[in-house]
Length: 113
Length: 109
Image 1: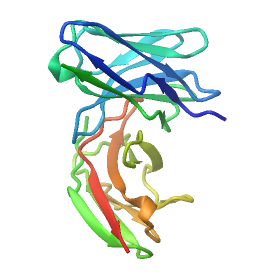
Image 2: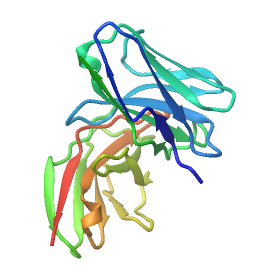
Image 3: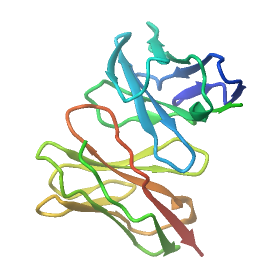
Image 4: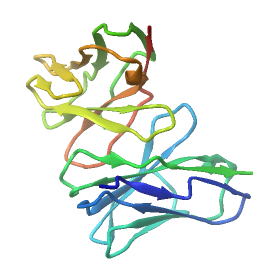
């Protein structure tokens, strides 16, 4: 049983560019959350998707947007990249929004130069 | 979100028990106490959670103070594989997790 998978593993972008990160949830999970983890910090909640809609959002600007597909996979899009967007982006899935246990993927390391 | 306070780092010898403390003096009655850990180069991993009573699972035990203002994660026999950052998180009705900076646990032979 595959766990949460994310692609790509690493990515280097230039300031002002746009990026799309992808996540496939664990089998049987329908809820996907995205987190940003800066170096030396704990992960920060970006948003959560359930039933193809954004259900909760953290304190992130509109440059951060997402999508969930009918197969429950999800994308995180970041527009107009800033140097401060350099971080590890983590995807987490759960069996429903009401289930507390979340399973995290290994993350995508984004570097903005 | 209610705040948690954890020591920045702790050390333990292998095969010894480890007690990781967490203070959460502003916890509300509906907040669950969750623990996650993050091994090097991996995403966080669920460890355990509880509301009022002490909890045990195959990974660890969670001891919750009677007034719920503090809790302790107990690893009964630390191994080198337990070296990680341990996060204590309070979670209310919202399903998002609010991480702090956690406790970095170092395990030595």
